[in-house]
Image 1 (spheres, helix red, strand yellow):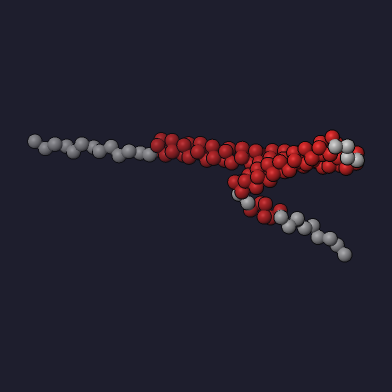
Image 2: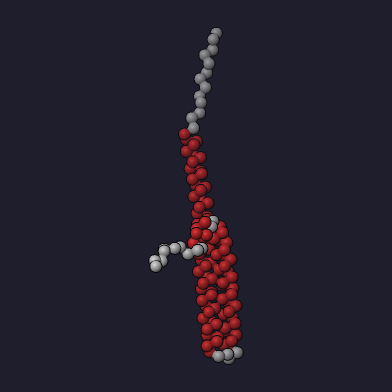
Length: 119
C-alpha cells in the first residue's frame, strides 16, 4: 500500500487567505500567546517563592517560556505579513504613477491647423 503525497488539510486554505487575514490572525494569536505565557511565568515564579515542589514550578516555568517564545514567533510572522502588505501597496502606487507618466508621454495632442483666411 503506497502513501500518496498529500498536502496538509489547511495548506490550501492558507494559500487562499489574503495577506490582511493572515496578518490579523497571526497578530492576535501572537499577542494572546505572549500574554498567556507571561501569566504562566508569573504563576511559576509564585510557585517557586511559596516553596512548591521543584518539578512543578520548573515545568510550568519551562512551559511558560515555550508559550512566550511561540507568541513572539507568531507575532514576528504578523510583522512580516504587514510589511508585505505595505510593500504591495507601494509597488501598486508606483506602477500606477509610472503608467500615468507613460500615458502622458504617449498621448498625441491634435494641433489644429489654422484655416486659411480668404480676403
